[in-house]
Length: 86
Image 1 (cartoon, rainbow, N blue to C red):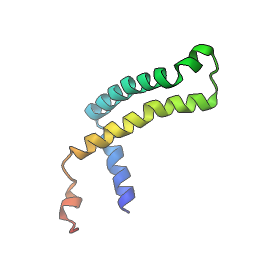
Image 2 (cartoon, rainbow, N blue to C red):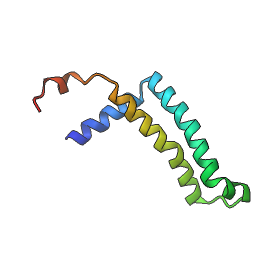
Image 3 (cartoon, one colour):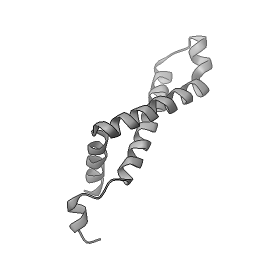
């Protein structure tokens, strides 16, 4: 149940326009740098395949998720989390 609540919070945070824009900008910069550094030679050589495409997608997706997790830690807890005893 905690995992589902966590994923719902992650989605809720990512759907907020200001958070989405900031996380998207971070993912764009970091993902591009990672792609150039790690896969630039394969892209220039023209050896682009499905596996490389998935790796490049991960280069953008992982920074987006990590920056979204950082945004989540700056949010106040939801009301139902404040009332629950730990």
